[in-house]
Length: 266
Image (cartoon, rainbow, N blue to C red; front, side, top):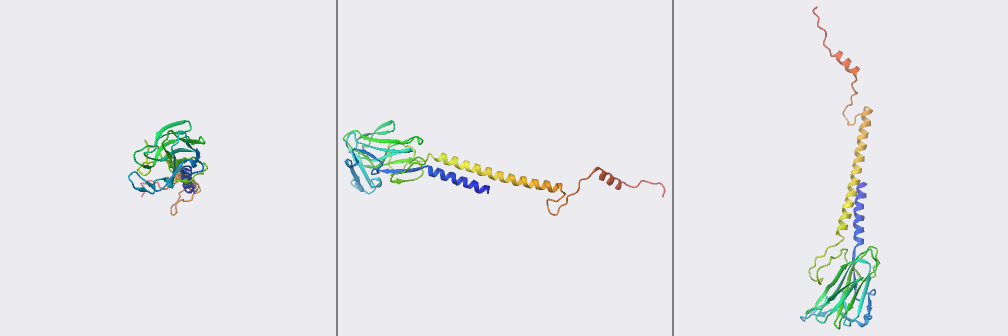
């Protein structure tokens, strides 16, 4: 029974960790996004897209769609509860500079590139999951396009998910510079330490339960042997328990075993 409880603790710990971490994709058409001017003023695009080399790419945009605008001061904002946020767009030769504001920190970057590159991770950051309502805002700085393909964030435990897609249970670690999901990018989960700690804790509890169970069994066996020895019963079938030898019995045994006295009369 103790072993069953221990294994149950392991499963519960793993389930809690998995439930606590999940990535959520927020597409450009998600109603939780706040566009200024409204999204109707942004230029929409859809798959397939013609690349600069003349080929068509049917998976150019994640989720099939995308919006862009080349108006200074235009913004799009997203508020979330979680521990990580990433912004994905494309890079192209008609793109320009923008700012990305996350809470109180602002970063300036450009999505310009001589060739078309789809689904590039232009920005990412970790935030405190215990602080609610983080906001990320993209702002166009010039009469050149900024685009939005999607946001990806790691939801906080218990957060209400109103976005369009929930993905894996691992959280990515920031990489240096823009990256495209079509290239090989190594991502590890910061929840790994939590998972390992939960597993070790569950194993420790299991070991403690097993040790306690075996100790109680051994104590019970030793107590039974002690009681049987005191009552003169044999613990092991086929063996005998001899009564203790007293001084009186030893004296009698000595007298009985003494040789007869020597006599010269024969």
